[in-house]
Image (tube, rainbow, N blue to C red; front, side, top):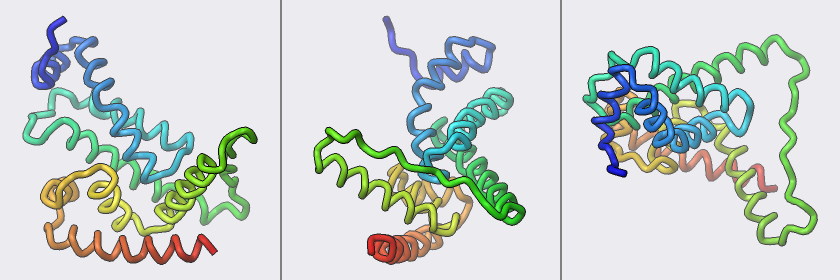
Length: 184
């Protein structure tokens, strides 16, 4: 089977080819889920937001002009939808006295101590990430987790490169402080 280029798949999807669209979703689903999870945590809302990214793109597929890569375009949608969800959560928390707590899934009793420590470190990092202000979290996720360059991150967020660099530096300091505080 001949592998089609992403550009060809986009053209076919824009022409109504469902299979081409599905292939593009399969190509980009994991990185988009990873971005949303880093912003919102492993919650049902995060799964909904990740799906919504592709729904939004499908609805506006003919407006996509390939000025940026599809991954960059989808990541920007994911960031915007994640920010909207964070705002919604903030509004919701103002009205609720008691919120539901996400109880983490603990490793099975027969798992090795190393697996537990790895899981514990991941939970600590995620908790600290969730406490960062969204402006800092976005830059940290895009630069350090997703691996975008300063220039790409600046373009996606429509902010100067210097702002990306300063937010990243401040985010790393704040994240280190939060991890230290949470690890006590």
